[in-house]
Amino acid sequence: MPVHWTISHPSRLVVAVAKDEVTVADIEQYFAGVTDGGAMSYRKIFEITHTPDALNEDNLKALGQRVIFYAQHGQVGPVAIVAASDESYEQAEIFAAAARVSRPLMIFRELHVARRWLDGQD
Image (cartoon, rainbow, N blue to C red; front, top):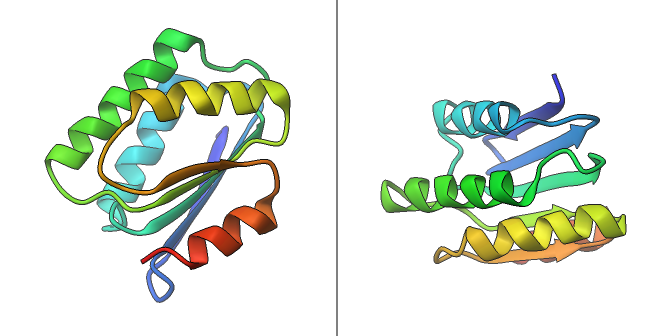
């Protein structure tokens, strides 16, 4: 499975890592798993550095619309996207622009900086 995630209920934190070829269905499975796990409102780290051009711009925008849908039906928590490569950073920016909802979202190049920022979010 290209997207692996863990949910920590005590920490109210979801950590996800995407690797290799990721499809819209893989991301939707992640969304469903986080929702089923009762963690959509939790803080999230999503690491996408190792997903070489996996999703095109239309797919990223469609996923952004999915986040808007989730936000309309409940709270979505803060998200720190880790995108160390230029390509993954550009993908993260497209997604972030399409997923504008009332919650903090930042894109980072380094995991430890993302985690420090996320730890400061409620």
